[in-house]
Structure formats: C-alpha cells, structure tokens
View 1 (cartoon, rainbow, N blue to C red):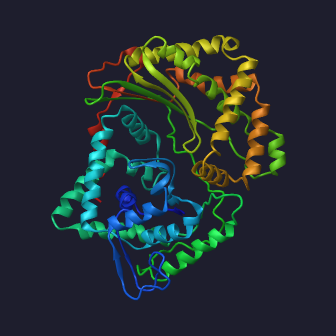
View 2: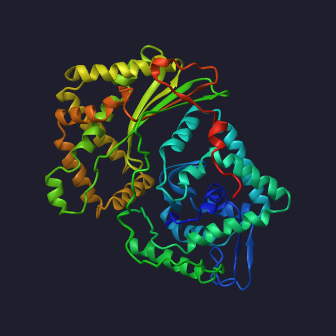
View 3: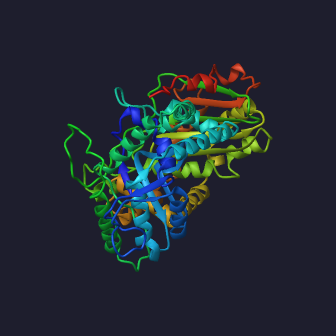
Length: 495
C-alpha cells in the first residue's frame, strides 16, 4: 500500500523515522465493530493487543513485513520515492486475507505508547552510533545532505529529515522530554502523521501474486478490510483548503534534486571512528529515460528518444564490472578495495565512487588517469565485442529485476510512475533502445558525462570521507573540511 506524503508538514517530517519504526511495532487498540483475527463476529467492545502479541501473530502469517518511507529504505535512509509511505508484506497467498487484516488494523489502530516510544528511540540512537563507524553509511548520508535540495520555499526533503545527521538530535530530545513526562507531545505528533496518511488521496496498491490467481479477489479483500476499519477510525479530518483531486496517480512528476552548481563543490569529512576512506563524485544528468507523452509512443520509440540514457547504462556496466578499467586502476595497485559507478534515475545524477581506500589520494589520481586514458585511447578500451558484452550485462541485470515478488513490485511501480501503461510497453521501450546502442553512442555519453569526473574545473560534487588524520593533497583540489558535528548543526532538532 503506497500513500503520498509529499504534502506532510515540516514539523512532522522530522518524526517520520520514529513513526516508521513504531508503526506495526507498538500496541494496537481495536474498536468495537471490527473483526479480531479469524473470529466470525465483530468485537462487541474495545480490545487492546499488546505489541509482543501483535508482532508474534503477524510473524505467524507473513514471511516479512515493513512500514517505511519510500522504496528500498533503511532506518535512516531512503533510496527512492521518499514522497510515498509504504506499508506491505510478503506472505503465502493462502494467508493473504488474514495477514492483510492484521496489517491494515495495525496501520489504522496503532497506539503509540510511552514505553514503545522510549524503546524505539533508544534503539534508533544505538543504531546511529553503529552507523558512524561504517564508512559506507557516513559517505552516503553526507552525500544525501549535499545533493538532495528542495525547490525554494518548499520543506526539507523527507530523505534529508531521515538522515542521522538530524535524527540524533531529534531522538535525544524525544527521550529527554518523554522521561520528563512530556510523552503526550510526541504521541500527538505521531497521530498527526498517521491521520495525514490515512486521509491522503492519490495512493495505490501494488500486488504481486501467482498468475493463476485472480487479482480482483485480492483487491476486493483490501477494499473490504479497509472500509470496515476506516468506518471506525475516529481521528478528525484534517482541515485543508486544497481541493480533493480524484485521479489515477500515474505518471508522477518529479524534478531533479541535484543542486545547480556553477563551480566544483569539494567536501572532505574526517571521522575519528573510521579506519578506511571512501570517495564519491556525482554530476547532474539531463537524459530522458522515458516517453515524454507529447507524441505517440511509437513515434518517440522510432526516434530513439532515450538512446543516450541507455548508452550510458551500457557504458556504466562495462566500466563498473569487477575486472573493468576502474577497478583495475585502484585494486591492482592496492590503493582501494573496489570502485562503483551508477546512474541515479530518481535523483538524476551519475555517481562514481571509490570503496574502502587505504590511500584515497592515490586512488583518486589513478581514477583520473584511467578516465583520461580512455578518452585518448577509446578503441583500446571499448570494442564492438565490449558493446555486445555490455548489452548482455544490462539484459541480465534487467532480468534480475523481475526475479522476486518484491523486485517485480518495484519494477512495476517504477514503470507506472514513468508513464508506461504496462510492463510490455516498458520492455519494448528498453529492448529497442538497448539493441540500437552503438560504440559511437557510448563514446558520446562518455565525453559528455563520464570524462567530467577527471575535469578539475567542471561543476560537480566531490566528497571524501576519511579517518581523522588523513591529509588531502592540494593536487586533488581545494576541499572544504566539514566534521559530522558541523553538518549536523545545520539541522533543526527541536520541532
């Protein structure tokens, strides 16, 4: 179940991390009139289900369940679609009706108790301490801080609010005030988030099930359970001047969050608890990856409107493979464990990184050198055989996206948001473009995008996260040093 939260108030966004940890993780109070578990008759009076009993019963029915901001989320991060709140589960399909009942009731009738608020807040704080010892987590948290910007006048993005850079202070405040007897303040905030979710419009259901099953049966089950519970949901409607728009939610328009840079943004973050270094460089992409809808699908496909996007996808698959030129440049010389390069579809950026470096300066210089060498000796690195290899790699990766129910759901949601009417249309768009990519297409996107990573004057974002005693030589550029504490201090923590 995917529920829009793009309009949630600024004051509430800071508490989404705690909310997602508590939802389906606290007591549930069922009102009279709903059906408990597999009973035949509705409850005649209110019934409290303790957290441990709720969790035990749900675990009996499902193999996994989740309530989180966006897709592919962790406690303090969200990879994509942070404007949606997602509640879901994976279950044997025979268990679906009963599992759905428990999850829907947990969503609508969660009771945010003081004990659970304190326990979850303490656990989240412990997780932050662990994250700060992991160079990967620090790197991507800081990268999110600098490369995810809101339009002027709009609230800070949910991804930014979820970051441990803000949450450490928020959680400490929750714990201190709750111990001082002010838990009601946070219960009210959590209920407001819950109320906002339940009264949102434009949400949708994503369903993955055996092809022998009838989808409408499952959809009707959700409608029946939701209506039964919502009729007894007692929180008042939220006052708003916004018109209620009933529409099909797709496609969902989203803009680039990458900041507009006029010069390089170079940041060095030294962290005392780290033993190895990592780097991440990112640049803004402006490549169309889907039909615009301004002409017919067939006309846009005929013109190969997204050829550069798919050419870059294939080039990245070659450069980023384990025995590729980037890895060989650093790993073979012992500078770093590996490299990574990928396109961020939702953030509209190209990212190049160096993973777990023992000598970050030499690793960065080696990457710059190999990029310059690819530029000067293209045919030595990319042959027609390599183009065929890249096509095979990308096709295999795309096949993996349909290999499990959860991955299928993510792919279906992505296709729908991008305006494809079904999987067949998306697969046709993708396969025609991939088959048309040539070595010249790949060279064009290399020159326009990848080669920029070695250009010290190009306006891109460069981040180094290192042990505290690491010196950054001037030949890498003039990096501004920022500690985690200094970055955290830019966030408000008392809402």
